Image (cartoon, rainbow, N blue to C red):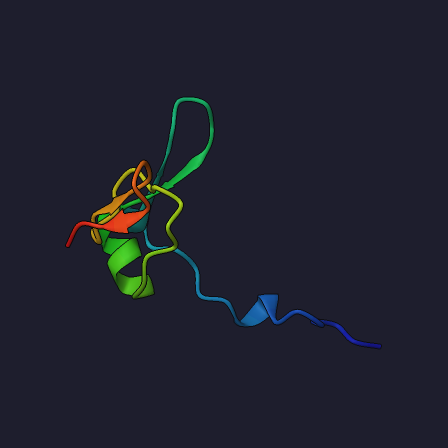
Length: 61
């Protein structure tokens, strides 16, 4: 029997300053978390440190 087929038990927990909950209950990642992740996901994140412009599809930085 495979207890952890997808490796979820190995994922690191988020620190308090890496996210916050929006009034609607969504998790919003902070710039610190996005920089720690190391790349732009090109989804137009609210705190994107890479300067992605969702309208043009370009990185501004």
